[in-house]
Length: 158
Image (cartoon, rainbow, N blue to C red):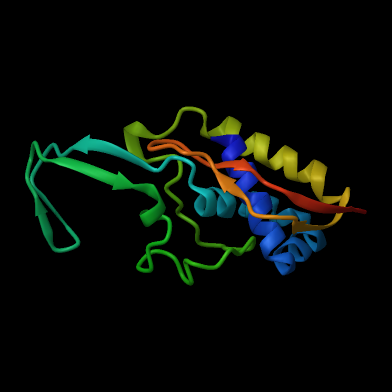
């Protein structure tokens, strides 16, 4: 999942050069940028859960025992939660992304994944002047966890 998020984040930076420039100008934004990359790439597509008690979500009743599909990509583009959810912004301040799940089912590796991403982008930023797409990115075929299978980029060294 970390490699899927890193490649998805690199693609987003390549497609949004003003965001790369903003991040290079202010590396203190790296933690926020990592959260945005997690929200943007969302490598885990969905999970199934069983409702434990009757509840109402979005005006719909879900009864105890009902199966519920959680679509993380949808949650990470929820217009009721995120301002301008279809824009990639490295300085997004309010980012309750759901890429790691929530509650007792939250990913145990979330701290390591965040640290790996932070270190990766700290190492890349001062070595790269520009990144741009050099062809079409291809997604891996997957029904559960997925990301980019290939990401052709043109990198201009700093």
